[in-house]
Length: 427
Ligand code: SF4
Image (cartoon, rainbow, N blue to C red; front, side, top):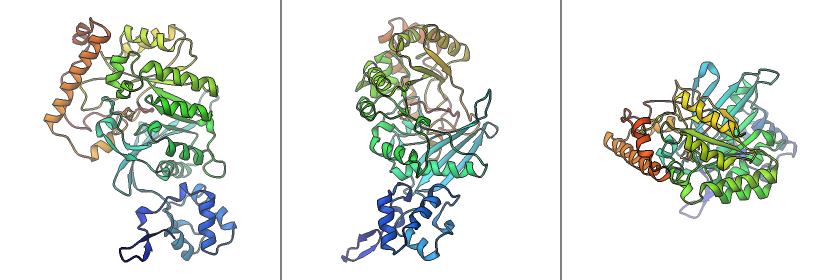
């Protein structure tokens, strides 16, 4: 039994929220707990079935065990580290946004997306999960970045987002086919936990997802990419670029000040060479900020000949930025410029526009509204910073920003004011 010392020096059971999640317990820990309880070895197999292959969502529902055994196990492990989940369906059932409340009140999000089968391809169910509550990177177009950093998730808290989705899919006779670490947080800043979760989720004796069906994204943590490269996994690496020139990327992805874009792309190319897995680059298109012919040309110079793939994503509207998504004609023009240079390009469609929202926006809704003054201050800071960044990458950019909308009329205050949900995280 997990115990803590009382002030009187006696051992007392640990409170439920301090217990480890059963989904992160390895075979040694499970065997030790069962041996301590005098259980036969075959119980370990029954326990794995209950955790990984049954619809049970609590110890109470593990009816292969006696009530006494369930109680003993509940004193040692939490069956589920997610205390509560709110589901918001969208896109006629193709998208499901889940807001998970963890036991300490932190909120994280996952998004389940169904891609119907077509042209010989099977139906796919892709889950986007979070690795942190909030995010310290602070990309200014991202609702999670605006929330700030809460804490890193424990391994079981990452894995249990997946178990939740798998249980929901099982009720529809479907199963998860793809998993992406593109929700809240920067996965490579919590790499130990992400690696442990990935190992559990790809373990055939546990969740059993094929390694090639897993993708990990980063906004450019070079030491993390290098660590992944040394491990040579079969996962897809997705790198969020959003700008190809440092002054602009310093603004849009603040980690760029530490690891400039050329170093990020060089590290990602080394990953591709070592693993044989094509790197995918993500690029959020923001009207008048990073979507011009000069931006496309800089991107081509950066990615040309690397054999990677580019995903273009019109920015999800986030209420507290002064910016908007690039209009469809600018998206098409940008895609054409890059594709003409021989770089594979896909334009991703936003999903779930009707339900809140972009990565972090549901959690932001729950944390309350900032004051109108703080929203206005943030917007005017971003307008000034983007104008300065544009001037430094292109001296004539001051004219461009007036004509194409870098400084926009402020949006209505309110985190939930405008909503969008990307099938991919934008960071
Ligand atoms: S885009 Fe990604 S890395 Fe940037 S703040 Fe949002 S979650 Fe963090």
